[in-house]
Amino acid sequence: MIDIHCHILPGVDDGAKHLEDSIAMAKQAIAEGIHTIIATPHHKNGRYNNPKNSVLADLTRLNERIQQEQIPLTIIPGQEVRIHGELLEGYEQEEILTLTGTSRYLFVELPTNYIPLYTEQILFDIQMRDLVPIIVHPERNTALQEQPERLYHFVQNGALTQITAGSLTGKFGTKIKRFTNEIIEHNLTHFVASDAHNTKSRGFNMLDANQEINQNYGQHTLYTFMDNAQHILDNEMIYIDEPARIKRKKFFGLF
Ligand code: FE
Image (cartoon, rainbow, N blue to C red; front, side, top):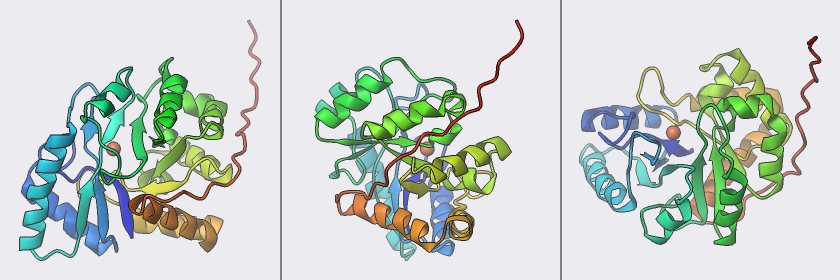
């Protein structure tokens, strides 16, 4: 199995604190049947900056240690980029890294509680550069929870999305779990990934999530998600089902 979203790099964000943490996460990944991880440290999220060169250097050190420990895990570069006005400039200046470092696929993170005004424009500009934006964990954005039609428009306009395994298994509560299922049912997501930060509170949960997908949506959906992760590694096209709108019941209050 491939995990395309993981905070396994040591000491660079709120993921693994040090090398020993990273090794523990690597062992948990292996136990879950994961053989390849894209390391995606936070970038420009207001707390953490991890420009391309430092990601690559940190990754080399981690991979050396993984080899020494003889853990059969391949870790490749990536980045979780918070959406910001100068995102494309950062890409031009080689601060921003696509998934694998050479693919067209770029992780874009929205803030937790709102959707910035320039979001549509940035998603468009990314695609004009022949890159494909992947919105990470849309199910955890409170504005999208309330206005899911906005997610439909992002996908309709060419963005892909990645849901988090723990959202599906209920680690973030029932509201997020319900929205995650709606997102899958309406063909509004293309990848499932761990977004693991450690081995305890924010572990991988990939096996449990895959079991849920298999049970609720069948093997075809599970294999589509798994194939899509492989397509990122190979920089190939992603299989896209026609997205549908999630309808929210209108609530008319008394004023
Ligand atoms: Fe993340």
